[in-house]
Every structure is written in C-alpha cells, then in structure tokens.
Image (cartoon, rainbow, N blue to C red; front, top):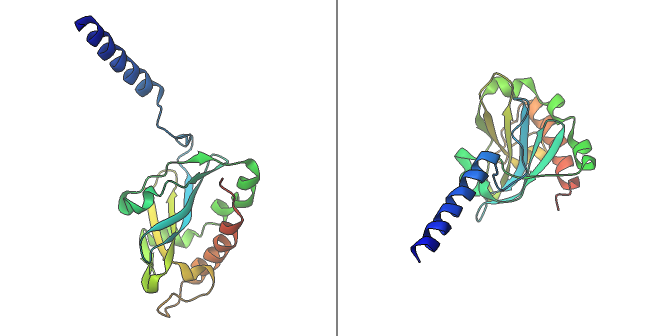
Amino acid sequence: MKKTYFIIIFLTILGMIACKNKGLRGDDTPKPLTDDYLVFGQVSLGWGCRASAIYKIADGKLYADTSNVFCKNQENYLFSGYQLSDNEYNKVKNLIAQFPTELSIEGSKAFGCPGCADGGMLFIQRKEKGKELQSWRIDDNVFYQNKDVIGKDFPIYLADYGKIIGKLLPTLKYK
C-alpha cells in the first residue's frame, strides 16, 4: 500500500514539473514575441461588473478574453485568452498604428466618469517596447460623443479613437 501511495505522489510531482517546464498556462495566449501590444474592451460597471469581451492585439494576432477575470481584479488585470481568426484580426489590425501618442504621454488614468449613472467604460491597456505597462479607464460615452456622462469634454484625440473602437467592438466575433 505504501508503494502505491509513493508511486501516485511521485507521478503527480513529475506531472506538475513537466507542465511547469513546458509553460502550460491554461490558455493559448502566447507571451508576446515583441514588447508591444494593445488590450481593449468594453466593461459594463452599473449593477455589477460585466466584461463582454476584452481583446489583445499582439504579434500580428488577435486574442479574446471572455473569462470575466477583469471584474475580479481590475487594478491588476492581466490578459488571458485565446486566439481569434485572421479575419477578426484584420478588422482591428490598424488600432495600434492609430493609437494616439497623446494618450501614452497622459500616463495611466481615468477619463470622464467610468461607471457613473450605471454606465460602463472603455478599458485600454498598452505596452510599448521599453516602456511601462499603462492602463486607461474611459467613460463609455467616448464611443458616441465628445463629452463624458457628466458633460466634460474628452480630449479630441481620445474622442476620435474611442469612436473607432466603438464601431469595431460590435463587429468582432469571439465565439
């Protein structure tokens, strides 16, 4: 009986070591080959957090995260998802090139009132080579107009970029 327990424990430890060494993480999101990626998505904050889908563009591929882990740990969110088709990537491939440099200069912050009046937000996370990871939470009115829910103007570059993303999000098929 002791030999059976020993064999079971030995094989379990061996299996754990093998998985760890192969880098299995439970998703198919590879670590970016480049230190340059963009994460974006819409999150509903009124009456509880609901992230419809958050997307990541990295290394010429598009990934979707529908796990809703954003809602569990918003401040320390790390993308985890699966790869989408090339057709879906082609819809968003210009978002990194169109990314407003002014936003990178702003640094991580909130714009408007994300979640106010039972609204939601546009979540953006950007990693550029040689720079720290930055995150922005933006009132979801940015998809439709130049003012946030409390009537304050968005910077023009942000309103323009928000409208681009707002048009793309409903067209992406992640299932």
